[in-house]
Amino acid sequence: MNSFKCITELATFLQKEFSQAAFPENWTVNADKCPPNMTGDLTINCFRFAKILRGSPDKIADKVLAFFKRHSDVVTAEKIKAFVNITLTPGAVYRDSVACLDTLLKSSQLQDTGQKRILIEYSAPNTNKPQHLGHVRNNTLGMSLASLLSRVGHDVIQINLVNDRGIHICKSMLAYERFGKGITPESTGIKGDHLVGSFYVKYNAALKRELNDLRETKPELHDESDDKLFLETEIGQATHKMLQDWENGDEKVIALWKEMNSWVFAGFDQTYKRMGIKFNHTYLESETYLLGKDIVADGLARGVFKKREDGAITIDLGKMSTKVVLRSDGTSVYITQDIGTTLKKYSDYKPEEQIWVVGDEQILHFKMLFEIMKKLGFAWANDLHHLAYGMVNLPSGKMKSREGTVVDADELFDEMVNLAGEACKERYGDSVSSEEISRRAETIGMGALKFMLLKFNSKTTMLFDPQASVRFEGDTGPYVQYACARINSIERKAAEQGLKFDADTINWDLLSGNEEKTLAITAFFYPQILQAAAEKMDCSALIDYLLELAKAFNRFYRECPVLAADNEELASARMALCHAIRGILTDGLNTLTIEVPEAM
Image 1 (tube, rainbow, N blue to C red):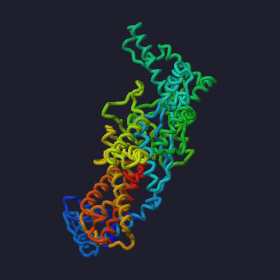
Image 2: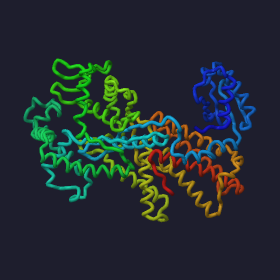
Image 3: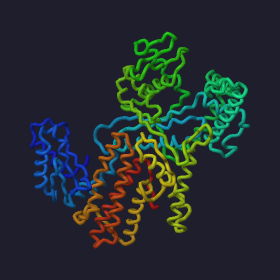
Image 4: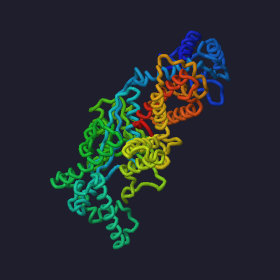
């Protein structure tokens, strides 16, 4: 990990001064940015060292202060309680930050040790309808976390588990059989997952009519739930029979199932391509739904599970209650399949960690799953993680998939790109071709969508406002993208003027202004932010940092003219600083799977 020279040398100094202390291997001293209400560039918190150095924070701070006061890289040093604030020379700031960060960004990874093989499962759509806004948040969280973990050096495997069987899939199939009249995606020009989803909506409308008729003819059933009355309806009985036929391998049902699934998968592929998603492997529940029964049988023989009087197989999970893993008739429950699939994924890829990106309504389910895997004796079960996320709402309200009012993913993409295109047209008018506007709009619109979905911690239930997210001002993706585009513009104009810079001969001491130093010091912390975000599995921390860096750049841009600098040497130094900042912003956005347009 990169560090300022004086901070690295402080660590060596403290180890000599406190030689009696038991220092951990590779012990380092970390500096923080000095708070804005204090004077200085960096601050050292000596409370952190008290336990290891076996001394009082105040006395440790005295030694730290004395060390910095005689260090050639330090202009001033000040002690406030057990904190030591230091101001660095401009040369030291740039030598240890942007001057070496450019090399770091070209590295394929940011850490030399601790690389793990991590399997992350996300998306998990059903093949009875297209993906919606909830899937978009899931996909964005999953693909961005996978990219972040890969960026810091881990070997990441991206997995999708598609739910392509069950009663809900048969609902779309039965509706197509009754109302479809043989239409196809090719004959209608409708995207395959949209076409199948339209029959899911038709099915639920037909079911609702039958339920209403049933309650009218039998008033005593008026207060019964839809689920309880499902098999009392003709369409419900027909759907249940279709499911039984599927499970029994009926050729006609299987043929229809395969055909409609192929339409949906083709549609999903288009959605994933637009988001930039590439899975290493896609598991199908039609191939995995019977997994887990043999594991339960083995666990029962070993006493991990118990057989109830009615024949059901259960496990005692303490405060989480007793969980049924096989019904009394021998059929699986959902967690049975998850037990089997978890073991299969481990057998297929041997990951050191597994992560599931699934909504927070499944928190208890995953706690139970992980505890069951531990009780079964799998040593790797301690490294199973559930990345839970909250619901996404729009200003217009919640999504309702059964009524067909769900916020469709593809339509949302189009809306974001259209909004971005309108913003570009408003800014440039007819000076930019329509083809170029379209290219920029795709990058800006999709980037704005991902950025806003990642801006909030995954646990947050968030309100997503499409129009606010594409603004070029404020805490948005386009704001960060625009900082990169602005630096591109500076470099193009510099080239027109014949102004160049050589990073090896830059006189960094010329950049002594507050905005310049603040920008460089903010840039210094990029690798640490990446590592921290990866460790916490929280992309929002990287979003916060990129916004902070973009704002620091814009303050610098306003206060420190680049091309209109007082002399060519100063202009070259400021250009070198801009070049490094663009590299970090671009790398950070790319790490979040967000592209950067050449111009906005």
